[in-house]
Image (cartoon, rainbow, N blue to C red; front, side):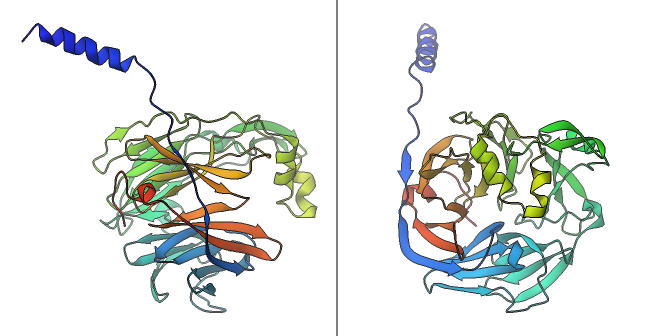
Amino acid sequence: MPAARPAAVALVLFAACGDPAPPAPVVELAAGPDTVATGYAEIADAEWLGGERWAVVAPLDVTVGILDLARREAAPLGGEKTREIRNPSIVFRTADTLHVGDWGLRRTSLWTLEGRLVRALPAADQTRGALPRGRDRAGQWYVELRPSAGRDGSGNRDSAAVVAAAPGFHRLDTVARLAPLDLAEVTGDAGRRFEPRALSGQDQWGVLPDGSVWVARVFENRVDWRSADGTWRKGNALPDRVLEVTQYDRELFYRKFPPELRATAEQLPFAAVKPPFEAGLTSPAGTVWLEKSRAPADSSRRYHEVDRSGRLIREIRVPGAGRIVAVGAEEALVAERVSAGTRFIGFSLPSATTRSTSGGAQ
């Protein structure tokens, strides 16, 4: 028997040096029949509420909209002209509670999933007014603390931190460090400054109900996981194209600015290549969905779904110019800009996409 061990080890090494793992399967999503047309100009965040109901943040319309795809209806959270929402920017759900981060009111308000205000939590001095972006079952809040930029922007060369705050914010624990912004030194009328390169991307992160935290590393192009006990696991490098920032990409970027600010926007430095991903979402199954950068000629948007081991499960493609803003158990919510505002469409998900690997469904 002892003589068999070298042979077994050799067999394992041979297998490790064999053919690379097959590419992840590609899933093409198709639009379902349910849509909701709204006048919302822009969508900053969204969250699944269960069934075919969703909450979406429309900052330029100073509202959080509650969508019901089955009924093809949209209504403002809190009712028309509510004073409970002023400048919403963040929305997330824990169990049966919807949280809305509002920088205008400097607070996080807690709502039932049916739309009734329960209470409001003022922004904490301990987090320098930064609002939470997640909460776990134990009641801890998760906040991103950015460095102070300083007058010349040089402070942005430091890393941001993701901290877990006790329910009363009396204790903060750093759980992750994020990559510093990609900066360029520019000289203008105001002197020397450090400006982030436009279209350069940044780390994304999220939290699961059990307190696990994922961080999508923009420079390494992978998803790392921190378990609730503090153990880190590095993910696998994700396969991606290298896409140059074109003049067309710059033009699309400039269009986001009002005419009076366009000249200023044209002075901003740009990255040479696009980041591997532009946004990240957490699914109810506990997987991460990364929105991949796209080329101008692409006819669909690509998403990588990554499990809790940091492994790519599959690539999801959504036809058209719309983008996924939230993922549910059986549907993905796609927001598509139209001339009159934003149209929301439900795209059905194959069962294997949401029931696979790892869980912790909320």
